[in-house]
Length: 306
Image (cartoon, rainbow, N blue to C red; front, side):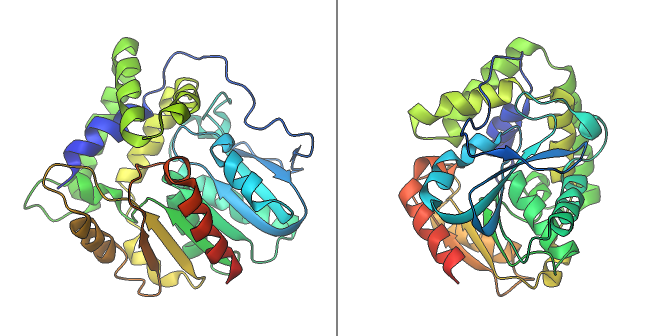
């Protein structure tokens, strides 16, 4: 139904562009790299108190959470995930094959090895997919989950009209998009990425950092991760999630699509997990924490206070 908008914006943002000089995701003196060896991700830790894990989306860096960390303030030990291959990092183990699922497994190992007790997990976009994988496949590892603007089966949005949205049905579409992402000319990716940022972030001042993260992300890692998202159906795994889950989402900005239609799509998407609390954030594009920071922080505070 909304395959067109995703092909025109989300896919565009995935294209890895010529590398640009990107400042470190966070430069706070209180931020430390966790003592955790992984070829899939790097963990940055700051603060003391209750544990919360923040997972950015596709081709994004930990700096998307800068305002969120500042808002949380004292009383929290924040663990920011930087996925290898995204935002000026070497691909490492993510150079080939899937990305989200292995990262979810590494996060489960991180939680166990660091001795974290029921941490809260917040994931944006692809980070939301990783958060759901973690909660479904390691239900005892997390205390609560917030998913920011993501559905459990993104591939359903790419199914042809009248075709049952299954992984098998959308795999050829995902294959074609991945091939285009890997083989397309750099100039086309540059123009598409700029257009995508406009569609995903309404707040103009916040677009530049997101564009820099995209430019400095590895093309192969981004392409493979996107392919994985389209061909991963977590709907059957949702009942395994025992932690409280909050889903924040925005209305699809697509001709003929009403906010109520978006509501129905999200209700159907999470139907297998009736305990999920679904909240629509209006007047926002995909990066809710950029476009509506006050509403996002209010929802986050309520989520963490439970």
